[in-house]
Image (cartoon, rainbow, N blue to C red; front, side, top):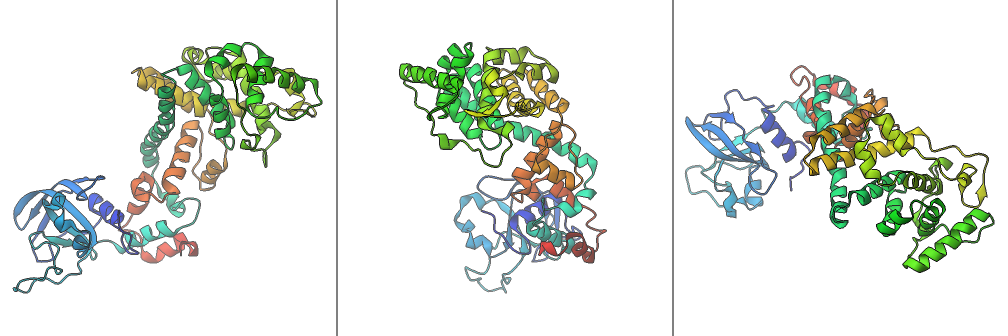
Length: 456
């Protein structure tokens, strides 16, 4: 685990060493040997020294090997590296602060030096103080994103380079779930597709409940009765635990009777009703109405995944997903509670399903089947869809980072959720740009004005 220090964490020290953001003129070890960095090496994220395959010239001799970084020199023995064979070929110990005295010619005490044969390079007087201050501000800032005051300085080229990587990471995260489903279903793409669409209908608060619903029904049963709309609705609402009470309307009573028959015949166990969230949401987002729309999609489009593979372009896919629920749901948001004519969930729901289900499915299918054209279709579809509208995307807009397409919004969601919120600034291209932005041109007194008192 990397140590954390108020002045310079080991993570920051790794970034400084790798990026070369320190004064490299006339570098010397603490014993006066000249040091030239031919290659800083490769960051090692596994056990062992921090950098491997480094090339250095120390005291006129060229060395190749590993480099270890610590905040203090004494951390070497504190971490027990002297007993670990992985550290036997370290050629340089880079530290922020050299806190051990050098031997005076006599035999050194065991605690005095980490390893007499390993040169030590101290960096604390070579690192720009503005960089340390800026990193401290990033770690302490409580705004929407840590680097908010400096986002306007990030070059457009940085965003263009970073966005594809963020999209790749987001799709990898989503498709990892689908891969597990494929293994569970013995590579039944139609069943995986049904789960993915159901899950997307439940977003954001009923995602797990929708997934639990479709997983509680044998897929063969679902596929067999999807052609009968009322039976399909009875199965879905019954398994959702929404047919457990007495009703006044004829239609819910019919569904209830149909479900009792299916439940007895197939040994079905309904979900507990408390799994569903209803509070603080618009009626168009009620799980009952979403289930009705999901049932309409299943009913209208058998072999949905096969159709999906053959359907090109966002408009055609939107038509494929568009389905009117049964007549009862034209005047109800919930079972047995009439309403003035209901509003359909709207076009944004279909786009939401395309972004969160169709795109990852196409991408995974292309990767799994080695058909890159489907991966490209997925990326093109993201580019053709409008950006999502949620509190995170609105937060980015407030910071003058706009989203035009779904590619923009998905990349910004990934950035916020897995980098900004986790303060992974040193792994983020935007964070690195902010840290390296005009370091030599900025004045320290400007920093407090930029960040404000909130950073403290």
